[in-house]
Length: 109
Image (tube, rainbow, N blue to C red; front, side, top):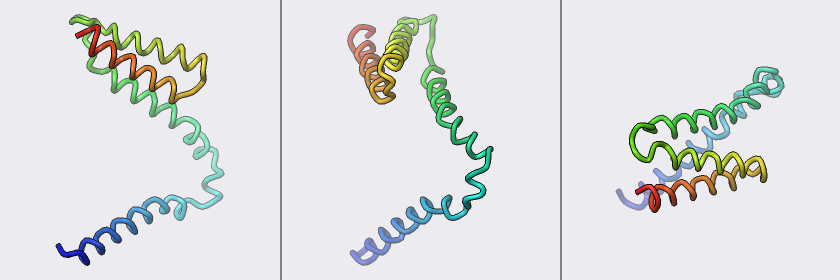
């Protein structure tokens, strides 16, 4: 590919991405966005996604083999306590991730 073809390809990607990002706002009009169902989904989907992520992260835990899910349980406890205290999702997730990685890489090797 020469430079012109690369530029055209990049521009097509940018236009397609922008179009796909704006498409829901074009399709969904104001009356539909005021619907009770849409508001319900807007309120519930973030919590549902977090629940799916937690289930996905914990699906391969084996409590019979060492380390018996201890690092995961400690990390979950840290996340819950920090979230109750700070009410900040980013702090909770970052601290839980750091503690989990520390436990897995140093203590429960």
